[in-house]
Length: 397
Image 1 (cartoon, rainbow, N blue to C red):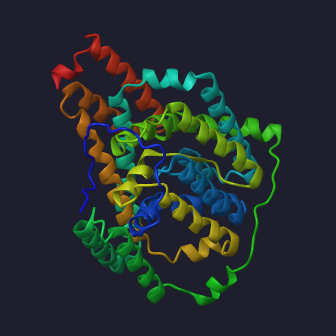
Image 2 (image 1 turned 45 degrees about the vertical axis):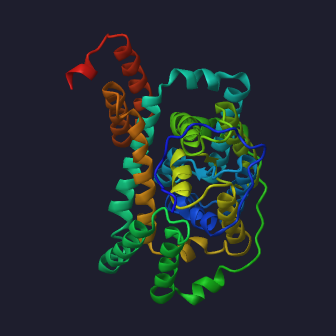
């Protein structure tokens, strides 16, 4: 059995080319980020009316692309702040695609000019860990308050069963927990929720639709959607993802900030023209895939292929069909993703000042509007002030 927690090991020489596997552990790890992605995709499709086939196909293709490019479980996720604004304000598709192109252009500029590396050097590791901790708090809160109790007493019983299976098998490479938990959810859905008439209506071949973003929509999307998203992307999608990749795969050639930001930009320079929702990488997604068994890019290739097939053949009525999968099961997967993410705090736990900064940043990220921007700025400022002895926060608590 391989432990699911992170281990600190001396880096080994990086292999020339890491093989991609498609075994039961990669299949189990493929579902490690489902609890984050699926509700967001359903929410933005329902709120904005954008074409579900285009969203699912492009989302799947981006997963396959990153799995083959990075050859590790590099996640692709809907932009979270972006999605939250779309769902809350019912922003139309043309502005969504304009905002996606705006954030792609912005990240491409930061990447090719090297400014992204300058920003990365300014942000201390304690702040990165705090951003990850804040995301863990948000995911755990979502899992426990929205998902676990979604089906009443039956949902709690299902969640308890899924939780027990996950605790017993967490980290087991022979019997991956996620596969059994997903199978449990599918059996529950087939027994109690499936409406064959609704499922039948969803079947049919669909292809992505071409869309050309207009200048006015790009500018509107930049202000309404891209600007609130960039701080979260810098902290979690780029800086924290690089750190997690280094933690989980110390034997591999280290990822660079520029490479991660480049693929982030590339995906969002392609998606808007084919009706895809804007996406990013994410430290929580990588931890989720890893925690449930993924060790190569095979996991996200499998994951992306599922969305690709759904988009091509089952996208009509997608929101109705996927609603049958029980939220309590997604909640358990999400809870363990949050737990694995929170354990990353341990490498700053021996330094009192670093731990305080990380905890403060996490609480700010989880609890405030634009919390990731506030946490990034406040945490970085306090860290350097403490290093210079200008404040006594580390000594007084």
